[in-house]
Length: 79
Length: 224
Image 1 (cartoon, chains in turn orange, purple):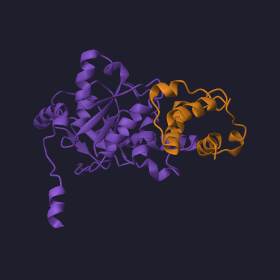
Image 2 (cartoon, rainbow over the protein chains, first blue to last red):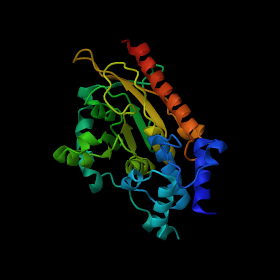
Image 3 (cartoon, one colour):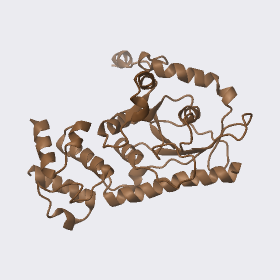
Image 4 (tube, helix red, strand yellow):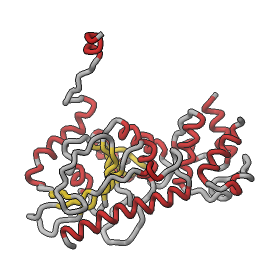
């Protein structure tokens, strides 16, 4: 399964709403498009850490504005 | 086989060099118990005699700068870590001293995942973590809500949240009083390991209710 599909599963658990996640792509912005607050971002980050076996630093989270940013960050950490 | 097992069994030591900067103030606090004269009860007004075992989050109301020391003295035989705001921890000398005494810095205005991780490790090592869920000193009953950070830490580590309510003494000679509420287990209300946005909102409300229950019990038992 590719990274975007695995992330969509995480978003499905986070939002509990299939309609909200079906249009998610790499350009989707967390705050403007998905309306996420800091707690939702933290929940998402912790779930991503568990799913992909990586560890985020605070600096990483400051630069995560879109789904594409997350995918790039995961790839960089797994490399 | 028994001899090998006995050799590999590590003896627990009361004195641990790693925790010495934390243990020295604890010893002072322990010796000052007769002077602090803390009167602690459960929500029904019965004297609190439960032995708190394992990791737990102590969630208390924050009314003054001395709260951390006062609440820590409720559990004098347990090593307690404290979640402290960046404005205090960033001060050069005080920050270093507090870090040695077991304080963990948290950046309140950003997503501080490193602090969450450090707190979870503390709880998984069966230590207590003291935090103030409102995030700042609240002197008047302004009705400002609790933050959800404690919930995330509790869910990450599986630890319970123990609500505590205490107020300032009216007179210096009075005993300081506190109500220690029933443990609240966020993982019992969460389907997955991390909550959905709707579950977080529900859990925050439940958590706020458990703190409020503690506050009402305090007023019922001790009056305003």
